[in-house]
Image (cartoon, rainbow, N blue to C red):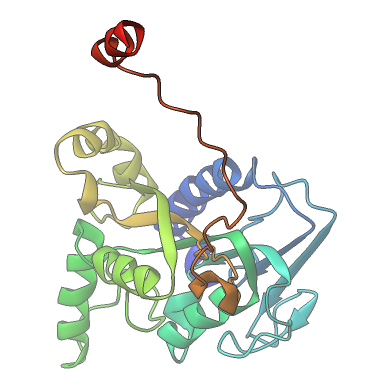
Amino acid sequence: MQTWLETPPGQTLLAWEQAQLDAAVADVFGYHALQLGMPRVFALQANRMPHQWQADRDLASEVQFHCDFEALPFREASLDLVVMPHALEHSLDPHASLREAARVLVPEGRVVICGFNPTSLWGWKQQRERFYERFGMGKLYLPDSGEFLGYWRLRDWLKLLGFEVESSNFGLWQPAHRSEAWLSRMEWMNALGKRYWPILGAAYCVVAVKRVQGMRMISPSWKKVPQRATAPVSVAPRAASPSAQSTSKGN
């Protein structure tokens, strides 16, 4: 992945994701933030939390610490923000990694996920090149970093783990070219794709919030039937009818 980022498509992706991440984390407040994967992307540079960490599973990466994404070294509900740029694609068990992110996040904490969209021009070219690679022909267009996670599948996983999707952004609709000149020449397709086929961008950036349903503790006293008042109540005397008053006067 690090080598591919030096290519023209990698630089194009890097610029788009950096802009998306800066906008996504700028207004997220708290104390502790974590970035998993992609050390070349400074996902937390626009965030103002006092404690920030960068982790990766690749031992050659220059980060604060190395760990498996499926077993994060943080206690439950201890982080306010987790950013995962392509971390699910590099994970041995993407669902377990996402479950770990849900575990370490505090209620109302946010997770930001970036990934390749398999339903895109870049994704389709990757599938075709992977087919040719089996016969010793061609070269993969995107890095061979595992299975790409589709957008709708990711939304289903987030919903099952108690997340609510706050925003979803797609980008890079130009055809999959390897040269910088052709990528720049076809940038006009980004505006067209954003308007007419928004979910077919080559990459996505999803922001989700961890929701925890509130509850109200009750005691066994809620079953008690309210007792009726037993104090005596004074009753006012009823006034006599007009016919009774006239009879008493005649007597």
